[in-house]
Amino acid sequence: MIDLKAWPLEAQIAFGLTPFVLCLSGLGIGVYIACSRHFKVMLKALENSPWLHQQVNIWGITSVKSRTLVVGSICGALLRPHLGIRKGVLDPVEISEFPLYLKRKMIISSWLSIIGFAWLMMGAGLLKLSNG
Image (cartoon, rainbow, N blue to C red; front, top):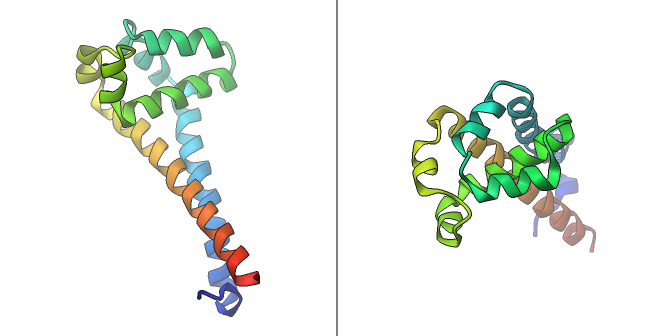
């Protein structure tokens, strides 16, 4: 059994803050994309994608929040594009021609958020087990 209370204070703080740093870094990349010229590049690259049109209709693109939600949705779709292609909501040609530099940023954003959330849940579970 892992006893987190036996760890040095610096290690406890680092272990507790790391998931928040990871999640906020992922979110920060998404906000950066939403507020920069990359957002228009993303819209142009997926202009025939039903998934993008659906997300834009749901969230809109007028505020930073709505743009960030659209970016997050597309980031998730880019993680497993073959699923969207199979369901007919992503165009395979557009996915293959999507700008590589932007795709990398969006995938990194998704993975930082996923890993940060998983770390947070693991840490909460370890705390629960160590207190039990």
